[in-house]
Length: 467
Ligand SMILES: [Zn+2]
Image 1 (cartoon, helix red, strand yellow):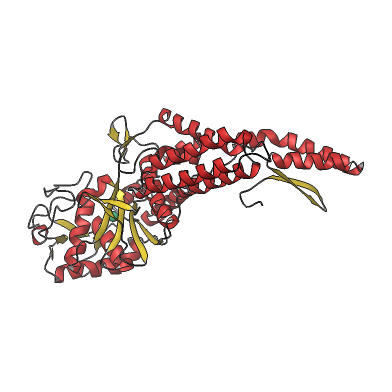
Image 2: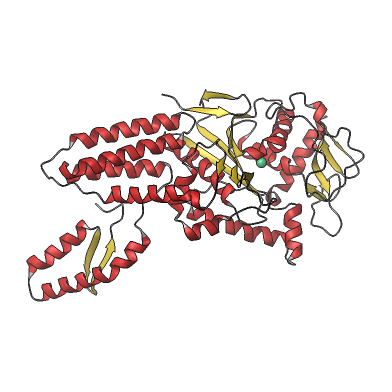
């Protein structure tokens, strides 16, 4: 089975053949104007799983994700609280990492920013003017849509956008075609701006992604990810800019668009004000529960969100904890059944993920293995059960899910563990070695390790790296 990945542009699910030894992935990141909400989490977790699975399949991956660290809304919000816009964006960027780290979303290899890419952006705009597909007016620079005949190839949409919601700028009367979009906008004197051949200003939103991709990767990439709400105009415009600049097509092999998270039937968005922040959700549920929730649908599916909707995922996570606590009951018992179940589960897991990253089906295969473990444990050898649990743990890891101990359980157990450690110490002093060893061994069965140090005995819960 080969890995197949959908592509929004062609509407096809095609075998994945990387352009080069290293797979090039670009994901449209945050405009750090407010804390990330659950809809952002959905997209970033699914794209994280894409990368993790590619690495599991042995691909080398380079993953880039931008921060649009200056835009009109950042300027507005910073101004409203009397803060410098760049400082404000930096703070919001830190907030992004705090919460996405808890969700175990792995870091991109690079995080280019608009403010850090200004020279390259100005160069890219000039290049489009030189190629005859962009022009300057007294207010800025525009991409000339009629000069790019493939416009609409991604979204099937070519209509004019009109004035974007919330934009303060009036329509420029010198625009040649209503569909033309801004590559550079002159900034008012009292606003932050950068010098350019066309005057002091700021780049349009779309040009940053084309520029960052070109700077880091060249003319073509394997995978471009983002939410489905970016298909038009953002990604349509990225294609226009990139392909008009290089003459090479397709600029992206696989456009991967994640479904939009819905709340009460509407898209969750900062602009709609109907959002729940990730930080708020993580106050109530564990990060792995939220990951399981996101991965319970295919990445292209629109998902409904409410706090109640998290319940089945919380229950599923508790089942995983139970599965990981199972112990083989018979040292001379069955070792074959679980080995076969593990192999089947891995095969089914990979077949599901090879089919355009079908995470819900892959999770189904893992729970099937979990059921086998529970069923077989009483008559299986401890080693066979532990091996099957290891396989399960490893495959869950490909989805970025870790089965951790319930923090509430751990806290509850601590005083009793300390009591047992104390009793063992007394037994040792009384040279009752058999009793002392029994306490130590029984605690080990319960995944508590004791270490005798010159300062006394310390205890901790076993970690996956323990032998
Ligand atoms: Zn982008």
